Length: 213
View (spheres, rainbow, N blue to C red):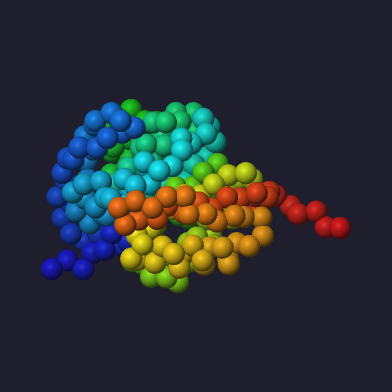
């Protein structure tokens, strides 16, 4: 039995490539998935809820898909906003390879599929969309969010989908407590056992100097 997890950096299991049907902003397409990545056999329910309960992204800018898997969120954002750059971020190299394959197959040239350390430090994001990897554990998840949410641009939003029975409500409380100044945290939708959480950044991004008075 393989000990691979979808958050393994280099899955040891055979790829076992497969093609599945996916609705790309209402257009049926086929994408390639593989063993050793999250929800390889279908679009998972949480991501489906997120895609159907978030507004279209802005026409341009830098977007972040945190924990991209084989790429449903990245592909959707890149298709909606062809003048934007979508950063598809994952620790799983196989997942990143699948995002690249799918982007090429669908003619989407505005996706950068990279590991977290490859995202330039000076980039801020017009939106963050994520079905975060809850099963990595609470401390690792919180570290991830503390790293990336402060990189939202001013007047920009992060959208997260989390299963209610996997701690969506406690995560909402943690977000509100961890980002009390310059942010607002809302629950915007509940569907099929999932919560959609929105984190709004009101102030200037963390990369800008703060004037001292």
